[in-house]
Length: 256
Image 1: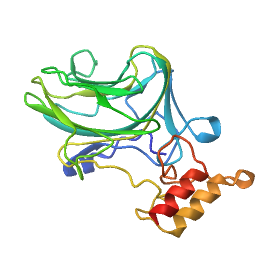
Image 2: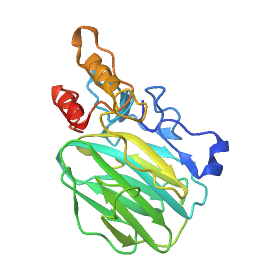
Image 3: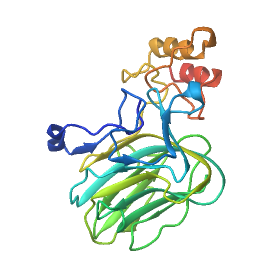
């Protein structure tokens, strides 16, 4: 799965990557901690995912904590979120200058329609999201700015906008909800770097090999075959709707 569940070995820190998602197991155990309301599971149990086999479903005050950052001055983070909310504007991502997660550096809120980015110096205007999966990427540097992208990414598109960032260094992040949500949130494919943009996933790459070919159509139809269902290991949700349907096959064939 790709539900942000694996801490990468220290050797990769040299490349500037300190936390990425896993395509191996439906578990949150390799986060620093997780609350009871954070459940990693697969579509056969009703939990959508954007990549891999599982997504992270958040209800109540469900969240996961990553305490692997170590006095980071600059962080680039990317994740996908799918909101099934009935009301409220929960904080869905927050970074802190301490491992106890008490001294907030930045927040991202989402009400199912609009995102708000706040890095402690100046708050942004609302940034519209969309139905289904939303891609969120941000590039934060303490004491200067935080650039943010919604359904775009730092690798290929100009920034949606930026806000001033308060001074500090990053020690921990929380993905999910620390205050109870009314409904549920689904997260997937969290990844964070020190310097390089993370970038978007290749949607429709159902077999996860990094390109779009007829093999992806086969992997997608294997998942759609309910009589002998085999979940695709890549990104079969081509249209990012939050479910795998024949519309994804049409989307993929249009890309091919």
